[in-house]
Amino acid sequence: MGVKVQTEDFDVASEVDALASGRTDIGAIVTFTGRVRDDDKGRPIKSMTLEHYPGMTEEELSRIEADAHARWPLQASLIIHRTGELSPGDNIVLVVTASAHRQAAFEAAGFLMDYLKTRAPFWKKETSPAGESSWVETRENDETAATRWRPT
Image 1 (cartoon, helix red, strand yellow):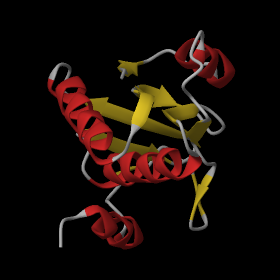
Image 2 (cartoon, one colour):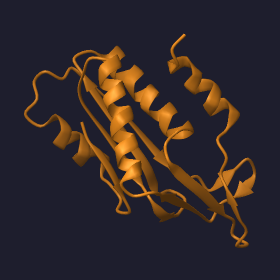
Image 3 (tube, helix red, strand yellow):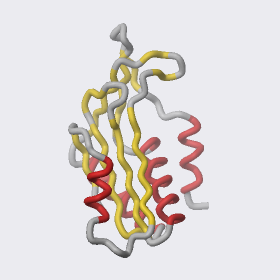
C-alpha cells in the first residue's frame, strides 16, 4: 500500500513498474490517471489549484486505501495526488490497484476514485483565462456513483 501527496508530477509507467517489480502474485493491474481539462461545461480553464491539510490528508487516504484492501483481495495499491497550481494537460491523480484477478483490481480502483472525487480532503479552485476563480463543488453524478460502495 502507498499514498503520496506531492506537488511534483509522476510517471505512470515508472510507478506501475515499481509497484509490480519482483511480484509474481499479481495477475491484474488497473490504473486510473486523472488530468486537468481545459474546459468545464463550456467554461475555459486556465489552471486548477489543489489545496489540502498536510498530515490529515495522507492519514485519510491511507485509511480509505486500507478499506479497499479489506474489501478486495489486493496484492498492492498506490494513490498519488498532486497539489498546487496545475495547468490543462497536467496529471492530478494516479490510482493503481493490483490483484491476482482483474475484477478485484477494477472494483477497488473504482471505489478509490469514487472516494477521491467525493470525500477526500482536497479543495479545488479553477481559474479562467480572464483570472476569475471559483471553488469546485462535488458533482451530483460523482455522489451518485459513490453510493454503490456504501453498506446497505
